[in-house]
Length: 234
Ligand code: SF4
Image 1 (tube, rainbow, N blue to C red):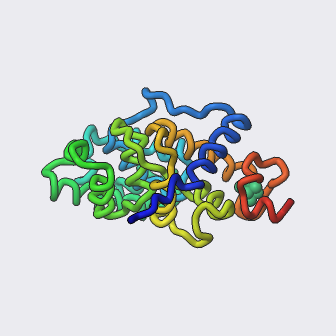
Image 2 (image 1 turned 120 degrees about the vertical axis):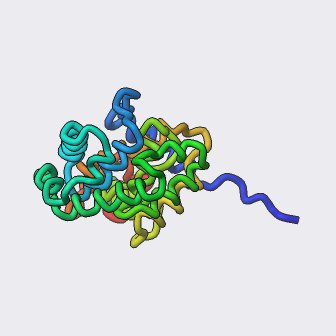
Image 3 (image 1 turned 135 degrees about the vertical axis):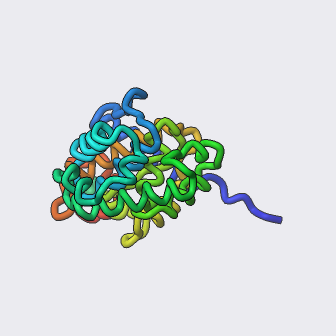
């Protein structure tokens, strides 16, 4: 006979964290009109390495304005793309990655079109996205969760990952894919795609303010009670 292990205690921890973060920072809900087309979201992720979100958003809009469609971006000269992406942290590398990514989609789908993903389960759609050059787990989750797809997939960026590593929710050296695989199965079942998005935005806020790479402000952090590192510092 197989014994039921019952609910994972980390689900309750995540519920508690969410409530504490909303109490501290207020609600951070992405309005529907900020959800973009999945291809736009993919491009924004591919060109966004180590670049502020606002700059990557503006660069993505600039590319579309300049070329009119993503197929034309795929055919553009890399040097010209790099010039348009000059405000990114690594313009030449971003141009190379973007071109490779878009050309692969054209080669496989005949156009820069991700509509086929809407017929696939989230995990399969993410696995397909991760076969594209320049696309790893953060970007695949971003496309599924923050675009019009609006699927339950947890985006984990550098700030988010640092916080959950220090808290002990994922192993200390877990990369983004491992952190994702650890947390996705224990997210509270009642959380919608929007709740999952808000969770990411709230934890990211901790990483941007209280839990910096070289400085932590544990006494003022609402996560201290549930945080291995924070409890040691108390
Ligand atoms: S309690 Fe300290 S280590 Fe833990 S998440 Fe907050 S700031 Fe980071």
